[in-house]
Length: 201
Length: 245
Image 1: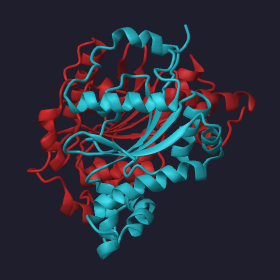
Image 2: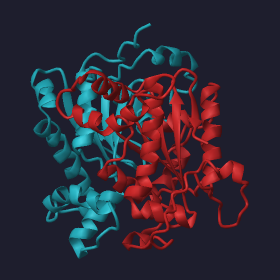
Image 3: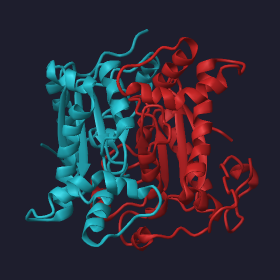
């Protein structure tokens, strides 16, 4: 038995599946319950159609908010949904080995890591232990929107997504080549905690 | 492995013995720092589902049993919960898992949004940024359990074994993943049984240890009894998680 075929073959179709799944989630009409039959198939391998770089926040479980079953989404999660070398390595694996066609960087409203970064810039609040590393990683995004009108955290969430979309191709030859050849797309989006809706950039 | 008991001594040691106790006698029990002031406001977010590491593990086992039986309870509409989640989060567990699409943590443990703080990287190993995320889940959000979750047929571990076996290298940054897992692959090389299965288990064990070795926050939280750290491996075929107990 071989791995199940990908649910979508192109970046555009992948994006469509994510939008439809999120719409089901928002409407309270998620499809995916029992998956017993599919598990046997998945033992043979995986063919995720999309990669999602998301936040560790417990309120943004990636497969749930996009209503996708096991085997569809290759997921990298870190508080603050930024890309580091380890995350790039994971994403490259899904592009080069598994043939995924879409990379989605997913931020969300009221992100604690972004909030901590804004507080660091505002009054120098430093986080204990390794947590400050998250602040350092998000600092460029928060600093870039400091003088923009509107809510600083909300603007920084958007900017953090934009910067990390750009970092995908800037930091990885494998991803840059896949994008240039037209096989892979990288896009950003923000999840609204209050309504459950994902707004794609 | 030492045993851990909660402050009220309510839990039988046989149930708690698998919780990795990494109290190395260093540091104060209390977690301090600016985040403490922002610790989960009881009024914000849905209340935490469980209160202790042992209860947290039992909840994960029950959820996995529901998922494996094809009768998940938590996959339906979350709309009524959404307003609460807009106010805050109180996840009971932090899971360091693999990016593999076949191991969606919230799905296999049949947990609703707000319950699992998830860190995922191919090969489920501890990175500095991952450690910062896990520390945030424990120090700021007061989760009571940390799970390192490996899985059957892990591609990252396979690549590490191929590297040890015949020097196979991966392109781009992917080789960084291999380098992180090679120690586990080497350790498992001469163990009896299947090299891949053994390396997957060894990689989990090494990263369970790495959490408290590399983080004062996690070490102190184990020592104070706030958290337990436990490893587990997910079997894709039967959808069951085997915890190391």
